[in-house]
Every structure is written in C-alpha cells, then in structure tokens.
Image (cartoon, rainbow, N blue to C red; front, top):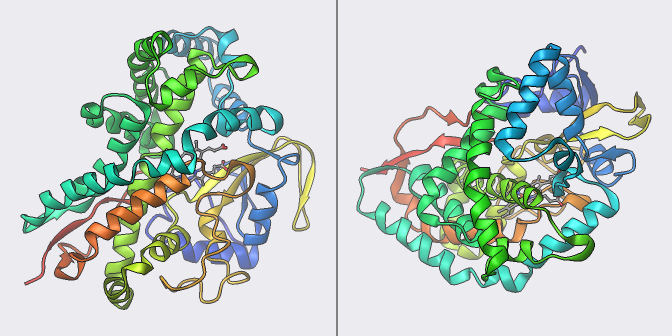
Length: 419
Ligand code: HEM
C-alpha cells in the first residue's frame, strides 16, 4: 500500500488518527518528500528515538535555518540575517554560541536542565496550589452567570497565561500581549503564517523582537535586584552555568510557548472528549477522584503536541529502514499514543484506563519540564468545571481547530446552558 503523509500539511487536522493508523500498519518509518522529513509512527520506535540521543539529536535548529536560507538568494539571505540580528539585539557570534534547553544534547542539555529544574521542584510547583485554585474560581465565577460562552476564551487561555506570567515574574496584566506573541509564533511557525518564510517581516520575528525588547530591561532589573521568580533564578546561575541575557530570553521564549499553548489545548481537548463521551463525563462527575486519570487520558487520546523533531547524528537504521546522517525526523507522539501494538482499544476514550507509557509530554531526557505544573493547572480547571459540564452543551457541532499542524487544539469551544 502506497501511503503518503506530509506532517506539515493541514489536510489531516480534522482526523489525523486514521492516517496515523495507515502509517503504523504500512509505512512505520515513512519519508515525506514535501516536508523532507522521516515520519516515525509506532510506539516502540518513538520511544527508541527519544531515548537514543547519540543517534537522534535534538539539535534541529541549525538544520531548519539552513534549509530556510537555502531557499533564498544570497542578498536576501544576508538581509534576513542582518534584520533578525538587529531585532534580537544580538551579534552573530553571540547567537551562534547561545544554548537553548530544548535544542541541546548530552552535557550541555544536562547542565541547562539542572539550572531550570530548580525552578520546577515539587515544592515550587505546589506553592502554586492556592493561586491556581483562586484563578480557576475567578474564571468559573465569570462563566456561571452566562447563558453562552467560549470556554477557550474564558478558562483555557487565561489560566495558563496568567500562571506563566506570574511564575516568570512579568506583569500578568499584559497577558493579552503574551498570548498575542505566543499565538503569532505558533501560527507563523507551524500554521498559515508560514507563507511569510524567513523574512524579518514575518509576524513570528516581529513577535519575537517585541518580546526581546520587553524582556531586556526586566532581566537587567533582576540582575541588579533579584526577586522570588523564575527570571531571578536564571540570572543568578553562575560559573559554567551562567546564562547570557540572550540565553535567558531564549528560555523565557520557550516557556511562554511551552507553558501556554499546550496547557490551553489540553483543557479544550479534554472537554471536547468528555462532551463526545457522555458515559465518561458521568463517571468523572460521580467520582472526581478520576480527574487525574482524565488529564492523562486526554494527553494520550488527543495530545496537544502531535509531534516533536529530531535530526540523525549519524547514519542509522530504524525498524529496518536506513536513514542517512543529517536527516530530519517527525516523531509522532499523537500516533504512538494510539498504537494498537501497545494499547488495548486505543481509539476509545477511557478515563479509568492505565495510561502509563503515553508520550504526550515526550519521553527521555527532554521529558516536559512543566509536566507537573500542567497537571496541576489541568486538574484544578477540571475540578472547577466538571460539576457544571452536565448542564452545558456545545453551541455548534462544528469544531474550529487551531491554526497549527504541530499543536492540536480547539481555537473556540462555544458552550451554552442546556434547555
Ligand atoms: C499539557 C501541557 C504540555 C504538554 C503537552 C507539553 C509537551 C511537551 C513535550 C512533548 C516536550 C518534549 C520536547 C522534546 O522532547 O523535544 C516538552 C518539553 C518541554 N516543556 Fe512541555 N508541555 C506542556 C506544558 C509545559 C509547561 C506548563 C511548561 C513550563 C511552564 C513546559 C515547559 C517545557 C520545557 C522547558 C521543555 C523542554 C525540556 C527539555 O528540553 O529538557 N511545558 N513539553
């Protein structure tokens, strides 16, 4: 069977899962000529790739930039580079030497992870219990008086964006600006905004430039006088672990995207799955002790991050397929989570199942740094919302998906009170 699949296409958005099944059955390691990527879809192969960083490196950034630059002429390439460096207030030398947690391997990754782990210890995460409960209560208060509302706008967006802003120690009242930046980056990088290519006028670069300008004085202020927030923790790392201002900016950028878009979509995807499976909703209403299971099952059943990327550090063989050094891989988390070789009845949404082995937060050394924070937020949000859900119905059967081939979620989830 000749299977064609481009992981960067929006064609699969309404239902990627039947396509994933075809891939797993007929082309588990598939080459997509359009994306110039190898697509890995079975659970065992996904786990192997994510636990073999010597073969499958996280240093994908250089290759992505090289490919983008190859498509442009020499003058445009130069113009693009100068424009970006100017916006970023960084010299080419500083940019080349800068480390970014998610794009490093081995010792450099371990060192960076050690610095940021300090900001995500169980004690630090649970110190947010009350604040998160308070934020959820505020959102629910707004919702309760309304006949009709968009759950994404009222709860799924404001909760994570406020938490990440307060965690970082930046002004939470600017949450709309943070959200605008992270949306621009996701849409521009993985959605329809890709049409702007590598131009410095790309909304992605405009958003990144604005974030950089916003953060520079804040980082300087925390260096002069540290507070009890994450940026202060980053500026205080010293010795080999010392981070440059540009590296701190890259880390904040990562947190803004990772801590924001993903949790929002976990909430929307979970509510959508509950509304489509009333028996499961009934179970969690009857027993709120099932809420942690609901969170994990949503991460398995409809993962907010559908795939992550790796690049081969050497010639490798994966499930009998030879892949040359320097190849780009799309590692399909969303497919591994539905692999019938690993799960019983994978297409059934079941909040009581054992979800051990889901890869919704990744796997191996880059396992999501914010997993416990995301769980805390999602559990609190579901706890507030679930008693109300049986009295709510969707206003329209139509599902509006997020403009991204990478992040899976609902851009709106309009609900109204049942008659
Ligand atoms: C439902 C919510 C979330 C999902 C589904 C999710 C998913 C993921 C995945 C799949 C990875 C692995 C990337 C890779 O291996 O290349 C990852 C890494 C990461 N996540 Fe999350 N994430 C979520 C929430 C968060 C939050 C709330 C934060 C921070 C506040 C966060 C911060 C990070 C960071 C910093 C990394 C990089 C870790 C490393 O490279 O060592 N994430 N996340």
